[in-house]
Image (cartoon, rainbow, N blue to C red):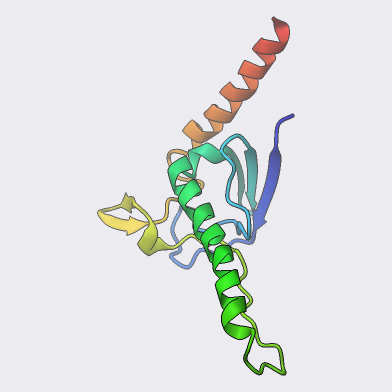
Length: 143
């Protein structure tokens, strides 16, 4: 089985550049290394890539551990609140979500930190990785 996920976003290009700057929303799931992603920007373009081509596995692990550690803090919070009046039941709501922040990016464009476009000049390389991966599966089936 090959995990495949589709992502869509509407066209937003505040910089009015030739390169599409829109990005998909990842919500509570990060790209999985062995999954294929199809990404389309409404009315503009479509591309595809492996999760491993856009998110380093070490970064993925650290981000997942961050939320796991937040969950562990719940027990301590429950103990602190257990003997206090809280008639309206206030409690933190922490939603696991991921965004792509320019200041956290290691990518540089024209000497400045930027977020790499999914449609950058590395697009062909990422798409070829998917094609090669699927071809390797076909070769395995023939054997």
